Amino acid sequence: MNNAHSAFSLAGKKGLILGLANDRSIAWGCTELACAQGAEVMVTCLNEKARKWVEPLTSSIGAELVNCNVEDEGALEALVQQAVQKMGKLDFVIHSIAWAPLEDLHGDVVDSSREGFARAMSVSCHSFAELAKLCAPHMTDGGSMISMSYLGSGEAVPNYGLMGPVKAALESLVRYMAMELGGKNIRVHAVSPGPILTRASSGIADFDALMATAKAKAPLQRLVTLEEIAQLSIFLCSGAAAGMTGQTIYVDGGVHAVD
Image (cartoon, rainbow, N blue to C red):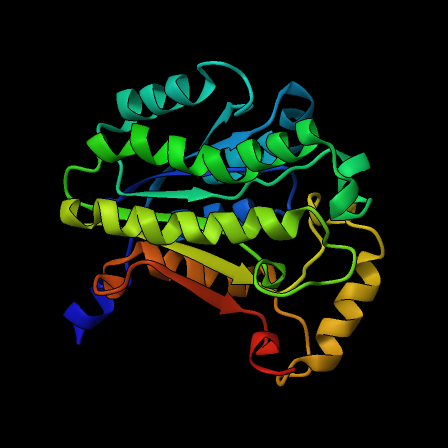
């Protein structure tokens, strides 16, 4: 029984988590739980402005905090180099960043600008591929790579707009990465949470209505919590999920399963 329990542990694991903005961030839930499970973690925030809000969180649990804007040339390379210098290797990566220009996000998809669409795709999707390329050589014992998606990837959700096509691309990317990295024993997943109020989601128009609709549709008759999203994510980073890869896994109270 002890061996069964140890499969869920992250003791001795080294991880990189991107996207901490505040105490409601999915990245924070994952960081807090990973550390509680025994992992050594380096976590990123966007810039110095964000850092003043989140440094008290990371310092309270001994996680190292690093600034990283994935749009800056060389930022991901510097981040991974710093992580490997500090921790020696990587066992898991959690990519929890998404962004689109508000003028494109709040408009119709057909009205989105070429530049805005490209930036949303670069930050929210392609940066995961870039991160994987940089991290894979340092996952010498295999590992897990996780990114965050949403139901709007597979169906048209009112007001989700531009991010729907971006998340659809992200989920496709996950499948291709799983195929390409499987030979190195690196597993890749997208976690698809139900709506919760984070800094990123607050930019979506009428987000309160989206949450109300999700709660009304959910077979569990409620929204999911940050802790539940983190629990799924950390499970996928553990040895207990060793036989799984290439999936989009929902933690949304069952909303994805009903019309």
